[in-house]
Image 1: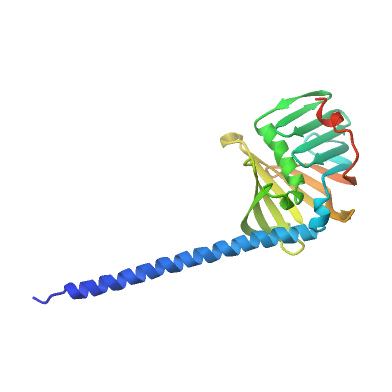
Image 2: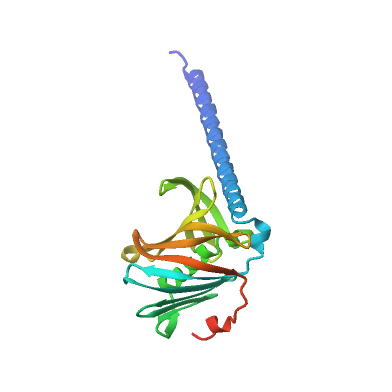
Length: 255
């Protein structure tokens, strides 16, 4: 009988070499893809910072006050809108509708919400929703502070006929948002955050438009808010003040 062992050994050796070669190629492809994605993340963030006024201008922004008018489609009401946001997770929102008044307050790891003067502490999804709002308003300023946001490139997409790049942005507390960035102008056009679990899960989204510069910093003058796919409100900002002189105790001490 003919000895087939050498033939088998040759075939096995060839198979092993091809298998190892395939593994090396796959690892190389994965490393290239990772490097390209990592490059994309850094490149996109850098271009966002440039589009919004540059690192030097954004670094000077410690707080922003916004005044405007809001239409609430959910309650079929409208009114005046005031918002104050400051680095280090401080957010104050006061909306005076024709029939009621609403306040939302985020002060570090504490959140408060209420209407008509009755404000109480909130936790869970209600607190997470305020953190989401703070994070989406802290863009792109949070990009220039070390360890504020972790950025992961997700995919290419389209939004209202505009090519966008979608990033996953995570804060250091574990809250994630998806950020839609125009592929040409590198404006932040939309931010989406998800909350709750199971049947209680929902997403909140905000679309930004009507961009203009204030003191060299790009800001959106129109904000449209969604709950899942339902449009709930539209806010038109009439005035921004960067680093305003305010009495913060009026916002964050008296709940």
